[in-house]
Amino acid sequence: QVHLVESGGGSVQAEGSLRLSCVASGYTYNRPIMGWFRQAPGKEREGVAAVQRSASGADYTYYADSAKGRFTISRDNAENTLYLEMNNLKPEDTAIYFCATRTTPGWVPVPLFPSDFTDWGQGTQVTVSS
Image 1 (cartoon, helix red, strand yellow):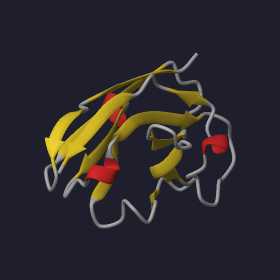
Image 2 (image 1 turned 180 degrees about the vertical axis):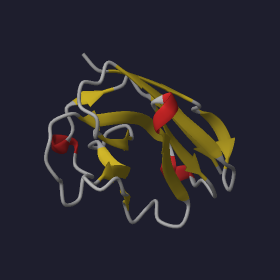
Image 3 (image 1 turned 60 degrees about the vertical axis):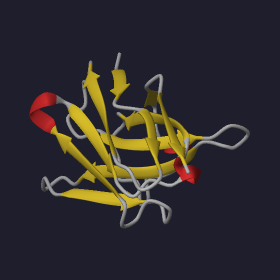
């Protein structure tokens, strides 16, 4: 069973930065899609960024419009760790951020929808004050 543990959340002022980490364990599939989602109070969970590896070994990254130019997703395969570097944070970025993975084979055209993912972490709170 896949186990995901997020860390790195916290409180920052607008225009500040945070780096989220997600340590994964228990994989049986060697090319899992991994992503970051967030959920603000009263809102649905939404995709922020994701990374998908092709059969040739190339990593493809995907970003929600709200994250483009400010957030960067990356992963360290040796450490089984996923990162989300968040810069120029805005109050509207305030949410619980979840790490997620999809462990079933198959290419997903745009893996930014919760239904595309099979396993989830518990989340880490990010609060941005103005």
